[in-house]
Length: 512
Image (tube, rainbow, N blue to C red; front, side):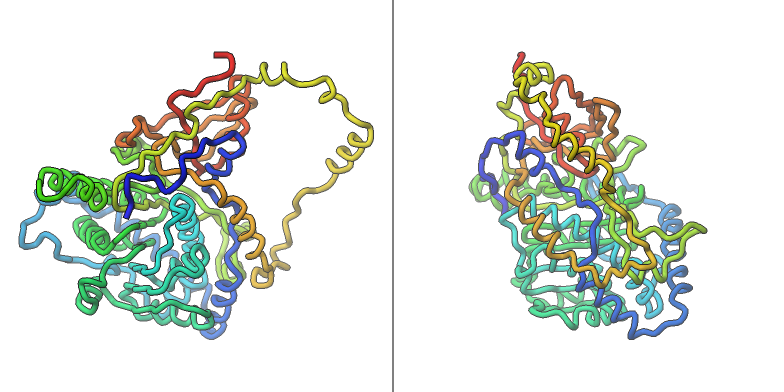
């Protein structure tokens, strides 16, 4: 349970540590060797000569889902998200009329095999990106009991294995497709030290078979599934039930489309509204003490939002989403088609997500509070004349290295992703960056959309908190110039879409 005491120490950031703390994006992700080999083995066992056709048919099914979602009429959607008690009768408040899979896509054996071949690596990459940020923002969080709703073939589980290798002891999965469950079991059969795994076809089956005292989970994740429930009422019902099964952290991931982002925004509004309502009721109740209320009531957003107020993008033409690039596996290269052009060696998976945590948001120190920055003119005035002297040997070395090709893309036909052992390199890099973490206070904004570099200026769109308790936020366009603040300008040039951006309430320059 989260408390008002921050998990991260009240450290003062330096310009050198700001960049490491702000980095949340992953560059081009390489799917782990274990997962690539498991997928290759599973597809080899199927021996399907019509795999390309099935992959194409699955892609068309996803397109049909988008068309169905656009045609769905969201009855009283605004009232339902704001106050569901006004839109439904008491006797039918949380009954499910439609379920995951009712939208028209049923995962039989053919669709499951095509999904493993084409979609599983991309879904894994999005889940890994989201869970990695949860780990960085919550360094003391290590889930032991997990619920994976809409588990599919186990993409989220594979991501959890990479993020928390030895943490998960018990895993409950909810997946109505028996074909998906069989594929998931086949993919993990060669893994060692597996947690205790129980499979269910619905949340109702889980609540019937599991005792009430054992229904709470440290982490509940629902990835790429809420959008496959056709009714808005039933989506809210499902998310409400998932939240009731959550003891600490709830993670929702959807495709990075306007529809997927809208689903995340609706669920965000409902969870925050519901917990604020409970908190007000508990505050009025004189039987509980204030300390008990702070520990047990409320909810706040771990990521991506830096605040718990209304989303500033709701009434705009933009939608909140992020992107994760991944190297395509051999199965994706073999079975995916391109429109005339050669298939690229990578693909960009767009996704929207949100991570809730129970409790009250810690009030941490804002990262730029009390920091002083020098202007470019002041930095140049402090340089020594020796800094401008360049040795002849150093100049020759610089010219030789400038002629070298820093990166040469491999031939896709000769590329075998199942042989490239790069997991240890990635893990070592992450361990070095884990030394500095951004706290959960309102001082860390979020870079939404790619920064634009124009000469000595960097233009960024930042979602940030506007007050110390992070109860409200705004979406601002900010321009960082090298002349006024070369330190932050350097950080802005190295920032990517999805990274954090530090803020402060009393930031000054040396001249002021």
